[in-house]
Length: 264
Image (cartoon, helix red, strand yellow):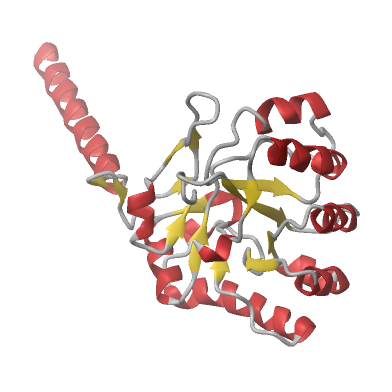
């Protein structure tokens, strides 16, 4: 009798496990290899041989359905410079000086705090021909936002701040904070007229108290550069400010030119 009770409990336990696994699988299911609207992910890359395009969570073709990109034209030795900034750390003026020296166009993805505290730098970015992209008002996990009104508010309120500072309408270019997204986010951004930009080259440069060395930075940024690369750097990084002139020189010496990301 005890054995029968235990056996029943065992089968009940197995049933619960299978139900739970089935629920998880459905919640994070893939349609082909495209993420479903309910699934959540962090943008990630898989690197292969030096100089080759990495693979992303979604392919170029899958992203293109949502006017989203992580890489440009891989047939051209053209790369796209982007900088993310949640706050100003004193290094952007130097970065802008280097970009000007190399006649390199860049896109700065900014949050609300940056526009509040550094309006003069935002004006300089625009005056010197760079693009200012929408990194949301408050830098939330956008994959947790499922309703369009809340999603739109994060973008529109940053647009309003930008127009107050520059007198210009903000370009419809968007990068999800921390690369957190789902398919529904991509769909909503497209419906709002936005292009979404991830990246195909980045490294751990955002830890203010643990900045990478010059050698470490070059060990990641030189071998992994590739045709059509969308490069993500943080303008809060002292290392990036210090190495940028040499980095851009190395990339130019390797035959790369700097493209305009909005032309993708």
